[in-house]
Length: 374
Image (cartoon, rainbow, N blue to C red; front, side, top):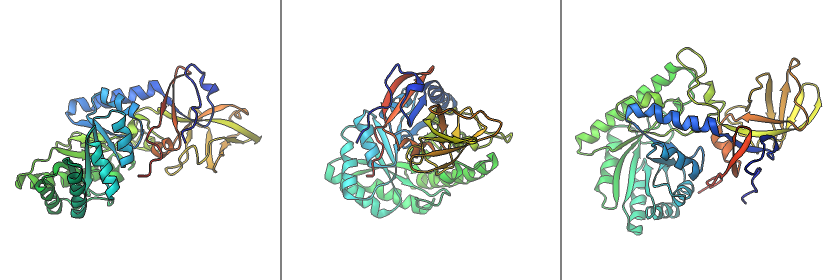
């Protein structure tokens, strides 16, 4: 059930009910503009990943700055974006199940929809759904470029799948999905360059083999916030699928630049606002934001602007803070901003974004695609 919003426009930040998902609008807009500026000279397109934000509002803001469309991982996410007016959506994932595929094909009446496959049987299933719907579906072949998750091996196996798609009267071969997810959080530049170099080689080799069979490859998609600056100048990737850049999180901020310093390409824009609900003794404070408010799968959140206070553990509704002896204890009732370790699952815990600028609430946006399991 959609919960009541934790704030109203015009309210001061310290009046927001907590825990709340807060966007610093100045930092957020900087991130949108900066990504557009970085990609403009490369000629590579941005197909931003909506699994991060789950919001047609944010998707439209990205597209207003030049994004050609959105990626999603689930049909439920695609539905929410399509109903919200997003005209070009790629499910950058395999979809299995007749009902899900029927729903995806139905979306083609209001948006340009595409999906990925890595098996001939999946091609058959998408073809059947497309035939039943009376529409042609665009299908990309996912190749495993080193992440060892989904994807057919690059080269001949991928070409065979592409040929099967191209031969169908109900399908359109759309290109390759070539995402190297395991490279995104490698800390050093050299580690990321090595892994993405291998991915680029695999994609280039497959594209060339497709051309030898007379198949054009309109899209070679992949990349993420951690590596897009490598793929975007590769000469082979055509679409960047970055998601987390809009918000940034504590884990991405641990990636290092060539000088060995934390990368500062984008700004932290997403926070979980929490209240000190208990301060039982010196050195210990407890927030009203635990596992149900902030994800800890990529490490504990950090305290914004308070490097000497550590968020050390979470339970369902509590977050424990270790306050150094040289640091002023937070006051009971004080509001603190947490920078999530991983923005995507943190967003999925909330119904509303509270947009803040200059210390006041400016906007409320629903996290419209949160929680969908299908």
